[in-house]
Image (tube, rainbow over all chains, first blue to last red; front, side, top):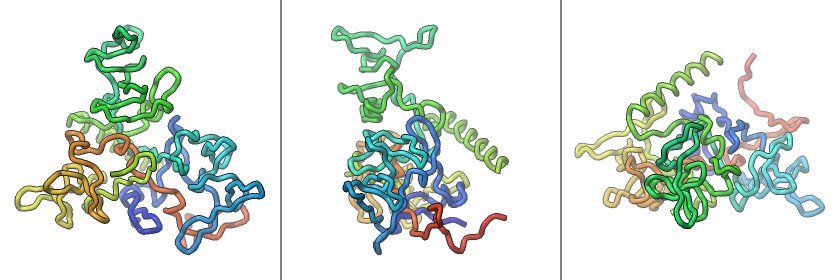
Length: 219
Length: 116
């Protein structure tokens, strides 16, 4: 039996059904590039005060470090000289600009739901699989409904950020790849599909069940 | 209202109290009038989020503060971006107990049964 994952104030952060599926461990997370990792691999080692807050030390140069002398940010994650969050092997997991000002990382769990159709414009594809888009007089690409899109056909706002059909900002422009693609984790089938119609939802749930059964067989 | 730049929002702060099916989906209840409720009788929407019965706004569990306006939700009652994706925020250290460590820096977890 497993309980909910709570923080130091006993506020639930992950429901017990998620913890049960992972034998009491926090599920592995994804980077934006789709690489899986353990949360512990990006966390420094610290003492804690009576309230459960980590005690971050400073080295001779005044840099924040953990008990092992490794550089950390204010949230206790391991960082390199540029402020990128790294794992224990020194590999960059989250670039500095993807963190909050305080240094918190995004929590991209495999059970998150995402529907890529929500951020795509309406258009036909050419034989090579490229979106057939129209250009306005001022040079902007638009879909068949006249909505602004980038060269990959994703709906964008005036700043180039990816938005959904309700014009809510989904991805900051800086997260996009050079060609305008959204981060790999959101287009490589790594997350669960969030669908509106009931048949797709049913198929998605059957796929999830099959995946769960496969995992059980492996274990 | 929550600030997406701070990554402090966690969906559990706005979810009602439910039993779950085998897939983890909340089993949403109905009162005599057919309104959606949780186990504590609190009004929820079709996704299980606590709502203000008059406005349909999404409320926080702890203090009942308004977190999202009803008009921010999509037609299924789901949260707006980026909160629909960044819905499980927490700090790794805040959900971790405090343990002694061995010479290699590994936490020494006492009282746990180990696999043979």
